[in-house]
Image (cartoon, rainbow, N blue to C red):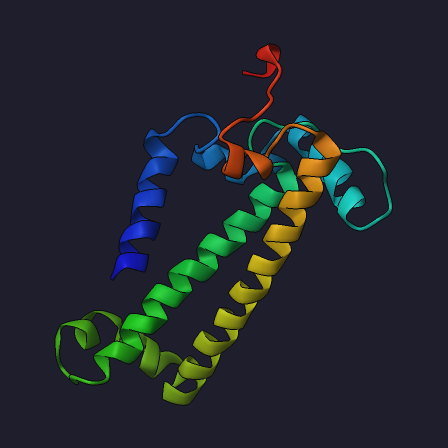
Length: 158
C-alpha cells in the first residue's frame, strides 16, 4: 500500500509541483531544444559524444527514463493487486484488478511482475552510477548534496 501511495503522491506532485517536478519535464522531446538536448545526452551516454547539457533538474534522457519507470511502477501496482486479489476471488481487489489475470493468465502475470522487479533493480544500479557520473562531470553537487545538504547552482539557472 505504501508504494501505491508514494506513486500516487508523485503523480499528484507532477501537476502541482515546480517546473522541475512538472509532468512536462518527463517529455523533454516535445520542444526542439528538448530534442537537441536529448540527442546530445543520448550520445554522451552511448559514448558517441563528449558534450553534455547542464540542467538544474534531470537531463532529457533521465527524464525520459523516469517516464518509463513510472509506467513500470503503475504496472507493478496493478499486477500486484491483481495477484493479491486471487486470494479472495470475487473480493474487492479481484473485482478491480482481476481483469489482468484474465488478460494474460496467472503464471504470465507473475512472470511479468517478477521480470519488471528485476528491471527496476537494474535501474537502481544504473541510477546510482549515472547520478555519480553526472555529479563528477557537472561538478554541481547533485549526488554529494544528498549527504552534505549543499548543491551548487548558478543564479541564472534558478
